[in-house]
Image (cartoon, rainbow, N blue to C red; front, top):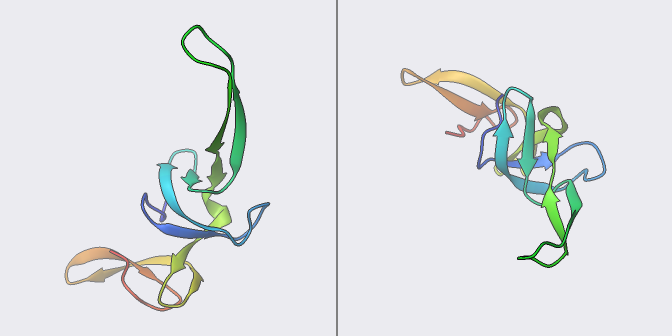
Length: 101
């Protein structure tokens, strides 16, 4: 998986197409990620002795193939590639060629 926690991504398909957000959590084996403010779902919290009933909104996981890394240099989404730079493997944005980390 080329997308990592903390990356800014843009959604390219689905109901939230065009939204940008930061990756909160990744699930590499499942190929899914959770993006801040994207795929917001409503959960109803049942009342207990300690807590009142409540309606909570939380982000759901989306497939990693539905997002692109947001390249701030190009100002739009970009694929991610790997290359050797100074003896170490680094990620770079294919659209602008800038090194990510």
